[in-house]
Amino acid sequence: MANIKSAKKRILVAEKRAAKNKSVRSKVKTAIKKVDVAIEAKDKAAAEAALKNAVSELDKATKKGIYHKNTCARKVSRLTVAVNKLA
Image 1 (cartoon, rainbow, N blue to C red):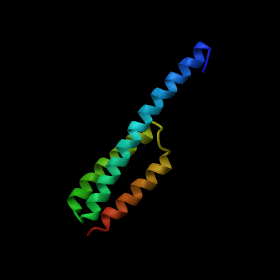
Image 2: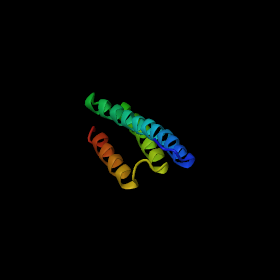
Image 3: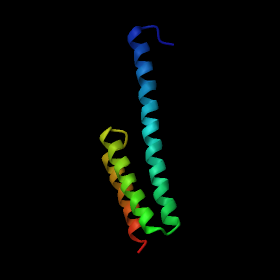
């Protein structure tokens, strides 16, 4: 365990940030799963609505620095292609 005051603070801050990042990642995963479920059900309208929400969550996570921008772009691209195939 840390003895120095600044090291103790770094531990607390790191735990707080890890919890926040985990929360945001969880939101993103849930949004992506909702798109996947709509695609499996072949429900184009629901898939498009879920896609819009998922893209929004991914963009927020990227802006906060939780995901790299290329990772976000790849995930959005794959989801969009999958939804567009539901003609």
